[in-house]
Image (cartoon, rainbow, N blue to C red; front, top):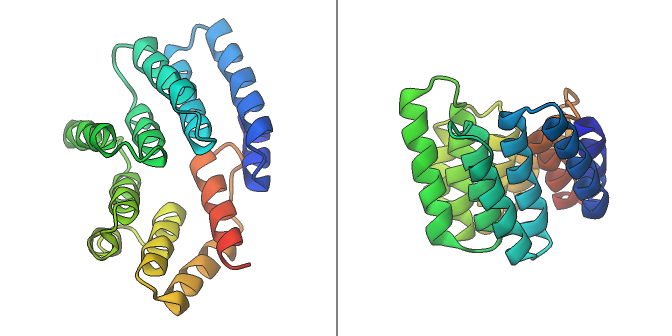
Length: 194
């Protein structure tokens, strides 16, 4: 189901992304997989937030938090993204802080995801120069980091640099359709160079 959601995400079809994620959520619940349930609720929140459905996104965020006591890092990441898409900077910052605290204790939190999240939030708040400092210190071979670098350059009016970074994303054909984040990265980069 998650690969199907990835296919729809690559196409920019939010309605079917939501349906596929909801089907994956039903499957995770049937299997009593609380961690995956929490992650899927938070991914659904980002889709809902992207569609400007704030109430539904907040409900899905609450469900992600209630699904399991020991929250996977992904929940903080996607919940922060959902809040960021809604331009709710306070809650987004709280999720970022929670993710940073979790990263200090858990080596399983990918550092590039943390940098990409912080870079995204800074860029969206008009602090693209600060975002670039963080992003350029991260793993610049990571697709999401590359995409956030392109967005920061674009926000600063550096069109050639933004295009170069987007082209790096688009020329990387190693993509897993189950990887919701990287599929969306490819879609954003493809749209940016059109």
